[in-house]
Length: 214
Ligand code: MG
Ligand code: ZN
Image (cartoon, helix red, strand yellow):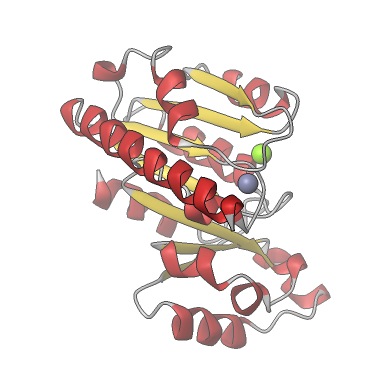
């Protein structure tokens, strides 16, 4: 029981810091995205494609969350965008305080879009508000179409579900109608975007979604 109490206190504190982050983002007129998925769904690949398409017209900053290594931040740094790596040292999610500390490394007033790539995990990141405007949950066709049913909180709190690796649909057992149906049962307002970071199919829909939200 005491563990539950402690966890609740931590969450409350997190919400307070998330509210501070939200004020910081608002003050700097920054649109912020919290990118969520299991490991290997393609978060960093989507980020690379997004930067390739928007870097000339929109000022983008990136926060990378990983349990270990700065591999993803190195991938992003190649595009010449400001990027900060948070290494959680075993922590399985980002917290608002970690993001707030990372913000000190950006000149926020020069940015328009901030993407926070969370630690690959479909469970507890759902409980940690970072102060972002939108939560994006990614799912790839190789993971199976039962993810929304198995991890409902993540799909309930998200604004958009991006289904990646549509180029592999013919090789995997992934029923697009089934996953859409299950996701909408959990969250009727969930927007769904199907794309392939590999072939570029559907990326225009994602890019349009970002432009519409800026
Ligand atoms: Mg990544
Ligand atoms: Zn966690």
